[in-house]
Length: 261
Ligand code: FES
Image (tube, rainbow, N blue to C red):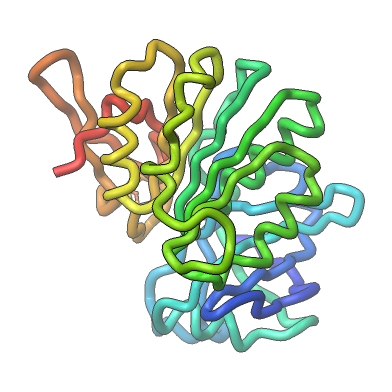
């Protein structure tokens, strides 16, 4: 597996335990597609603790400046290491990895929960660049994601935000807020977020005929389809299923075919 390196341009805390890192990488800018991710080595050079790389969805890209942006939440040793890096430090990554998401419809609805907003924002940016109509409905547990709203506002698109805490946006959970989902019958839907949210969406959207895609987040080891550590159950017909690898077959799957055990 070939690894590349990129220089950090910015690494900023933007909310409680939430960070944005900008990486200078002409290679990533040239080759990354929607829905793809990179696997970052979260340890000093020649150190291997933690041993496994960490997968991060691409959040944004500035092609004119060859900068790719990753959004990450402080969760453990790997992300703690990342949060300590500063401008000029170099990170080692593999990628872009995963199958690209192909946009087909001119009308797109993006439904995100928590850090799941990351790949959706990248899709939203592309929709705007391609003059597709795009709406974002996003839900967050607390107000640590407030600055993400500023990024969304800059896209100048329709959006709605839900927060489980009061005093910002609509109060509540994103799935409960989708009472107007009937207005989006002729949209393609892409969603990303925690499994309980995706499962609730699967139930809520089961009536739909249109394309409903889930971009799955999973713990990964190799990131390239070798270890099977990221396998998920996918329905095959009425009562059969198979296993697919999130890293190499996905991370995007038909939401209605994902089996949430
Ligand atoms: Fe190894 Fe997906 S992480 S197969």
